[in-house]
Image 1: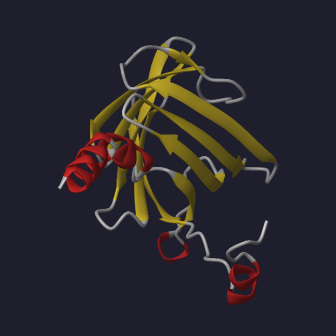
Image 2: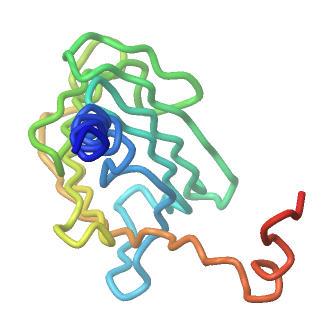
Length: 171
């Protein structure tokens, strides 16, 4: 009975750790081929790498610009709405970030201290699709919306041969 009670308490204590490790945003995302769209500026996102937990997010955005040259920038922000500096992005130099639910993140974009737009990212309930709605404003304040869909890259399990080599007593 003590063993069962100890096991139960241990499983309850580790529950928050397990939930944090299973954040639906975590992983590598590629543009969905079935829903691919070209944005108005001609740039094309190649991939997003996202690491997220209850306090903040890291996003590595890899893309090509309108001329086809590769670009990448990283967003590392807390979900407190504080200003965070962005490096290597021609369109933004600051962001503010919030978590609006377990499957939704909102990022406010700034360039030269002016609001230039928003990213609203939402993971599907099944955890395999990511919808990113980008709202931008031109110099006259005209709003433009673009919706991009991403598929989560699935980690392939090891083949039988590899699993067979890593058995009990194997190092």
